[in-house]
Amino acid sequence: MNRIKPFLLAFLFMVPLLFSCSQGTDVVESGTYQGTVDEVEPEKTEIYVKTDDDRRLELYFTENTTLTRNGETVTFDQLQKGQRVEVEVEKVGQRLDPKAVRILE
Image 1 (cartoon, helix red, strand yellow):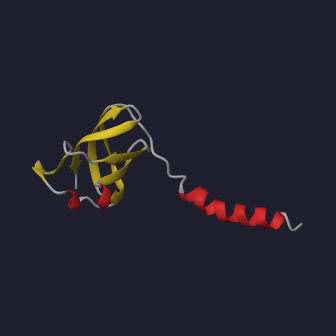
Image 2: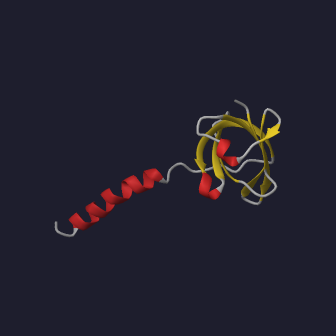
Image 3: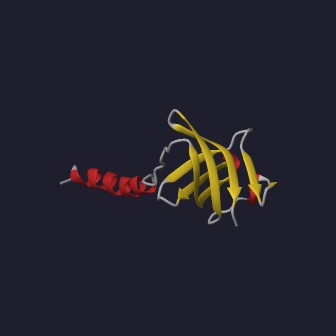
């Protein structure tokens, strides 16, 4: 019985950790997708977008990524969780490079 307790404690500790990692991301083909910003990580210039077809895209901005609203270039700090966006991505191996992100709202 004493050996079961450490195992049980370890299991109970791991369950929340496993659930926190369960929000995976999807790799899609190159193209243009619309969706909602699910998460913004300013220190990494990274966003997660939940697409209209229920995929979650992880997008790290590069020096070539354009960010616009109403046709005008805006800064990364204009992105907020819950905003509608259109993203143009290029699939590079198992990574998605955002070529353009347009804030729709």
